[in-house]
Length: 197
Image (cartoon, rainbow, N blue to C red; front, top):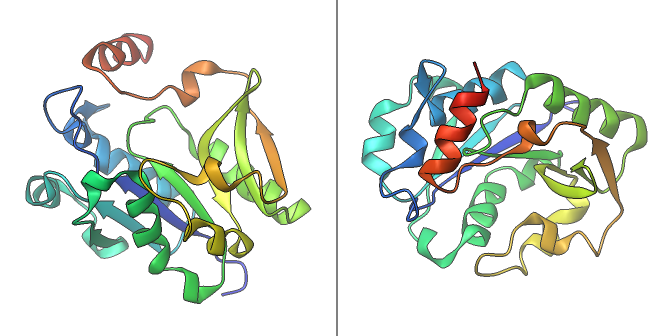
């Protein structure tokens, strides 16, 4: 139990700028949601919480590995990412273990990166870790239990980085912008697809 690290996959958004559920966009032969779940499983995260909101039923029907994950439904997803983060954390905080946050729309994140973040945590035991790419901090993010009370205070579209001024954060260095690229628009998606081959 002591060495366990939980994973929360944030996948509740409405994909308004894409016009269809980005959670179900195809990526390397599977939907983004299944790609994110496979990433979490392959990285050794346990338990894995998947937070869904918009398009809940459509996405549930497509999830392959339901036995490896706990799905929670965020009925307040329209109120912003903070609600998904708080809901996901409510399922793991009693375990008092760190949690890695994975965004469903960052498909180039690798198991090497997630395992690297976990190794850095085990070596240095910071309060939190964010990926730093050319001076920019982004998810995936690791939060230690010390961060959990701060997460209770965020609201709207605030995310983990909004609390990180309060705690000791280490950076996991990543040289490649492409790895942390996220999909906000259909153009982003096509651009990432064209670079991934």
